[in-house]
Amino acid sequence: MSTTITPVDASGADTAPTPGSRLRRFARPGAALLSGLLLFLSFPPRPLWWLALPAFALLGWALRGRRPRAGFGLGYLTGLAFLLPLLVWTGEEVGPGPWLALAAVEALFVAAAGLGIAVVSRLPWWPFFAAGVWILAEGARARVPFGGFPWGKIAFGQADGVFLPLAAVGGTPVLGFAVALCGFGLYEAFRQVRAHRATGTVPRGPLAAAALSVLLPVTGALAALPLVDDSAEDGTATVAAVQGNVPRLGLDFNAQRRAVLDNHVARTRELAEDVKAGREPQPDFVLWPENSSDIDPYANADAADVIDGAVRAIGVPTVIGAVVTPETGKLRNTLIEWDPDRGPVATYDKRHVQPFGEYIPMRSFVRIFNSNVDRVSRDFGPGTKVGVFDLAGTKVGLATCYEAAFDWAVRDTVTHGAQLISVPSNNATFGRSEMTYQQLAMSRVRAVEHSRSVVVPVTSGVSAVIRPDGEIVAQTRMFTPDVLVEKVPLRSSLTPATRMGTLPEALLAALAAAGLGWSAFRSVRARRTPAE
Image: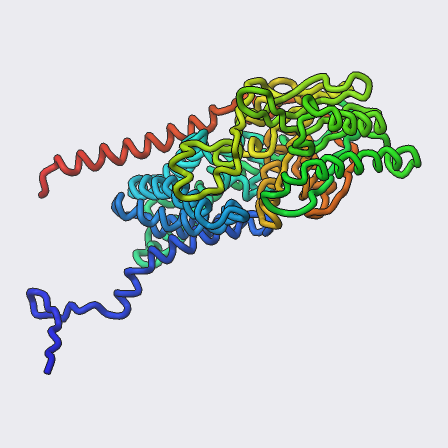
């Protein structure tokens, strides 16, 4: 016969865990997981940007007052719940290993943010410091390792949101800070209401912190509305974006390189016929996507001939996305300006090549876990020059695919005179996943951030034309050959975000550092103060 022993405390009271206490033990981890899931759901293609606010409110509740170690663990749960579904497209053709590894590593930055938020959560005006910590972690994630991975910045989920005008004020850091601050402020306001109900009074300081945390981002976004301007300062340009499509989905689409090239040639020739027949306006220039010619036209005369024939048919400068294969050294992911009379006249080599996609760091080690690394048999190398082409009098800034996620890669083109931005991309290797919509949202944010029209020509979808206010005026369907021809405004004025560059991010990082330092000082002083 067994005997059940019930724990008691020194006074003899029953201390056995109750079902309610067990549930409370899992309440904060559950809130952390739900917070991450809501962050994921706030991203495109869902127009649920506002879910980021309750996500940060839940995260604030889960982390406030926790010890640093608990904050790290809770933050890691949030990071996994957010990034695992957001980045599932990275395993579309190579299996779950790379996807799980990437999400697990990137979630460490969210874990570090969780630790920092827990540390500053006991400070007065803690929502401001907590939002700064989140942006500090995003900034670190955008830079390390291997040049960083900014995918999943909170700002990129806000293309349809009320806070979007703040992108023109201070770029993605200010936009993301406003969202996080408002979410933390909503939780603090809820906490103060509960305190008022319990005690009948609320100290002025916490009440002011809660109110400003919510009101400041909202009023700031309203005040920034005049910066969102799509007027044609420098006139207009008629641009054509060609989506040739690929023969089949997946990594093996490159085996059909000539078919991909021929698709883009055929769509361009069809456009030329439509222009002659008056069905389409004559474009000032034409944009092909990244990898539209994976056959090096400098080394293959037949590829050069068909490209030249298509460009002569349409009769305007055309930007070709090509893989250039020098005899020695690394490959180049290159955009070529092809003139109808003179042929190739300018090039731009992608400056931020994608680790584990266009080059393989630590190849021998990574091969142990996934043999797909050998599909990249020859690494791509980065270019060094900012890409701005003069296309029939219009200065077009170039940010190739992955580069659109990096603040500096887009801003450089504008500070070098770009009146319009092009983001040629190739999403064929990611199938029908959400990746193309996530990337399109980035381009919409960039349009407002720099007050420029943005054209996104993609091999397989979704291609789009975006006005400087972030509005999509035309887009294609996925894996459908198409051509978009639109008149877009050209602009040359610079937004505060473009002028200031990394300064807003540095100031927010300093805010986070001040909060962490203040909290450390208070902790040290508390340990040195003898207990009464």
